[in-house]
Image 1 (tube, helix red, strand yellow):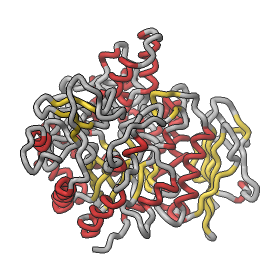
Image 2 (image 1 turned 60 degrees about the vertical axis):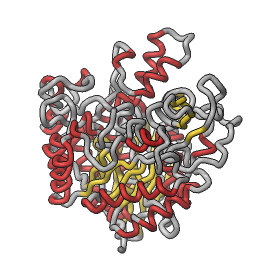
Image 3 (image 1 turned 45 degrees about the vertical axis):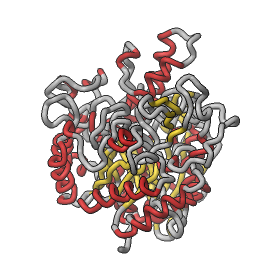
Image 4 (image 1 turned 90 degrees about the vertical axis):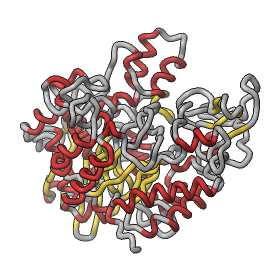
Length: 547
């Protein structure tokens, strides 16, 4: 079947279901709530939805520990609700993609329960190593979430590998039977009408032979032995050949620690195995590798990340554009300003929406939701946050450690969406499964719907413009004033159309930087954050010009 690359003309909206909208009043977000809000999502200009996992799960990692790949968790409405949402999307001309998590499963998955009991053919579905419970670990690899990457299983009497939580054992993708199981999963959902998959840490599925110790990486020991492993391209090519090439679908790979040159091995349109890639570099302008190693925000680092991917993928592959998702704190609290939250939210939107690629919005991003600051570390739900709090610098006071979590925890992206200023932010009529950010009285959808100058309505305008302009789809990209620490200026150009984007990331007035050859007196200003005709930019002002 010919694959049409329809995703290039789309804007996706990511839903983290637990916190999006509760449709049945039990306090948990669900698919009935999604069905209720499909028209809202479409009104943003979004014509695709990416669901974080909605499969049955014990919830050790909020659904990324899957117990059954071919069903929908009853707490989200089950398969009946899913089929209605899928139909509702397709009736509106919208696409729907699922989260595919096949590096690991839940330890409550039937495969693991049989593997730990050595029941064929599941004996080698996971990565087991012999030893003793009080003996040395099989190697020195770290888990991404909870200490070391090995846990002793009393039933089998061996160690199992888990690159994430203890309850997320890694699958043995070297086993052909496991790869056949993955293909069955893919066909099941594609045959139902799902339009594609976001593939969770898919670059981790091939581990180096022998699982050697890592004496180089100071943190995340072992990553160089399993990220972009020896058979990764072979396995992805197999999935593409046997499944994806037979459907007009879309694949998006999550890829920690990847740079454009390496990414092209996956997503080059002539030889790659995947359509697009989620890179982490744009999330590292205020940290070192991980949100839990924070640094001061550097606009130059942000610009370099954006420009590297724009320039190095040009003509060869397609960019996935994003500034927020479920795995990182809220972007206004990181790269913007909570004081100037409307202005900086608009400028952050402009900074990425006019680049070449397919943009993704994360729920609540469009209204400027901000970081949550609980009074007690026990209020955090996330397994990664809890571990980091317990094991961060113990010389620091509990309050200092808690303040670091305020800055770093991905739970800030997981508080319920703030729909209005009524109790529980309009998220539920019951008791919310998680805490609502107290600022919902000021920051909510209903208030912004009524304000034509709101961040929400600005997103609508910006998305509509990018869909109208051929130069955004096809134009070349060029960054100007790279060394500027306060302004991000880039242009998009075709022989028949030119676009200039100017974004100030300063909380002080700035003299606007205009590149040579761009005469603003002949341009049309098609989008701006302020009513301002001077050459002095207000704090967090941005403008978009068209010739």
